[in-house]
Amino acid sequence: MSVSKKIVLLGHFGVGKSSLLRRFVENTFSDNYVVTIGVHIMKKEVVVDASNKVTLIIWDVEGTDDFTKYRPSYLMGASSFVYVFDASRPVTYGDLKFNLGHLKEKHPNVPVHIIGNKVDLVDADEIKKALEEQEVQHSYLSSAKTGENVEQLFKDVAAQLLENA
Amino acid sequence: MTTDERLEILKELLLTNEKEPEKDVYKKIKALENSQKNLSDRIDPLLDERLQQFVTTMPETLGPVITETLKNEIKKSQDAVAEALFPIMGKMIKKYVQAEVAKLSDSINEKINATFSFKSIFKSKSKERPTAAMMLKEEYKAYIEQVLVVEKGSGILKANFAKNQTMDEDMMAGMLTAIKSFAEDAFEKGEMELERIDYQLFTIHLQNFSKYYIAVIVSGIYDDKFKDKLEDVLLDFAQYVINKEDLDDNIIFAKKLKEFFTDERI
Image (cartoon, rainbow over all chains, first blue to last red; front, side, top):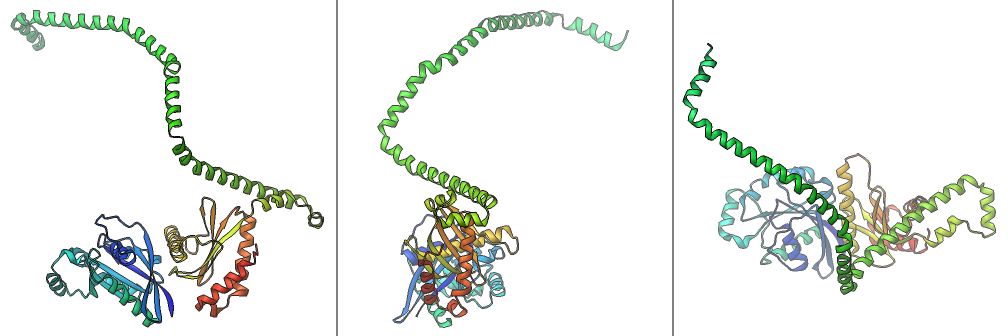
């Protein structure tokens, strides 16, 4: 079975959405910050198991501090959202609950995966503690720079999509 | 005697000593002003004359030097200049010619439609004497390069048909959807939809259906007549070729699309 699915990467400015995507698709990383304007689309086929694969069409939407201002048409038709925050900047996960509420209200049937990126910049135990204190539930702590958990994240997204297909 | 008059007398008495130097300074300033004016009166016309001479003689004296320098520089880097200019000029000329021919073709079509009766056109066709518009059409015919059927909203490609594969069709479907969505969001005009994107020598025709839209990449002259015909063909395709079940089966959809457009219906 082979299907194509649209995934949307969301999050504040500079949390590393594009870097995660580049690491996943091209296996590259750059320290230079290039702001995404509008949307950038990349795709990658993920082999879930011997007989199933999913082509992820990943929309890397420009970052925003106000989730209510995301263009609805960019989010339309998404099969899954990947919400990225910067584990080294609390301001990028301080409003997580509010933003998730907004997404759930507008897209009740779309699963959301929450990723804490740039984990290479912080102490893993400390950040886990900080996230627990703020009751931030996350699917993964990743690093686009080292590649930690990036492949696994998208593989899980693909597997979940296949289950729901 | 008023207060002012008294004050004047007092000033005269107290400032007698300062009066003389003040007068001297005043005289010197005046003298300087006069000499500056005299100098200016003499020099200004000379400067004007020199400047005028420079303006007149500059092209003669410096012109050849500048031209020669430029010529040499261009000659030295002839390949680079040609390389830089050729594609730009070529595309500009081609685009201009295409646009002008499209205008001419439309204008001839209008005149023919207005002037000739159906009978005379039929007669002309039956004698196999092509009209000017038909000749032009044949020469600058529009070609369908690629057809993409894209799911609305998600931008997921449902089917694709291309004579020559160019870029990744999934990415193209996604980006077209993003551009389309952006334009439609930005204008916020209710049901209005983006129908066409011009890209140098190509036109991307966008036609919307309820669950998907079709993007047709056309090279050559995309005029009103071609647009009308293309719209009809796509409507026929949606109405008579595709059924509800095909929307969920991308393989069948792609097969039908390929069969339909390989026949060169336009």
